[in-house]
Length: 252
Image (tube, rainbow, N blue to C red):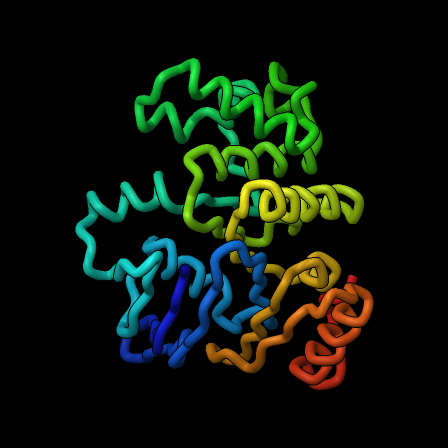
């Protein structure tokens, strides 16, 4: 579904070159809920920005459903972002002047689709994530957890091939974080959604099918959830402690 092969990315400041991604390789399978973890500066968000084509990369290939994204024109990339990728951001990125229902509809409005079909799809997603009762409210009138569930619903409006989520629980308390993670799980279970989530939150990552650990711009290891979430959480904490030199600041 989503394949990253030998990805390199660097930044230049004056005469100094900083290598951020160094030969990153991994694959996310169709219907998989995968996470990327690692210390700050390990390259997680840069890698996600490269996948979404928001940042160019030095070399390597990123393919989505067999299509190499680096070979697409700007117009084609814009179409991929709107129709084949869904995005969920840490800061929600909802439009304050639109209601919850209208925010969810935005991707289909951009495509100019029929309102009745749009209304039906939005209603289905609002019910799926338990937020149909706030459909007429504005972002300022709802909680952070509700805002993020709205963002998840919006990301699914065009039936994307994959959802890219950047720290989706980063601004939420533990209860709201769990509700958002359950939304991703429900999207996988009910809609077959494929999600790649960058996170610092070990608890949230423990609900994923697989976690890709990054260190110093490289894939350090991958851990697979065999169905026992508590055991998987302990495995994640153990690897993070080793990556952080014996201490884990991300366990909360």
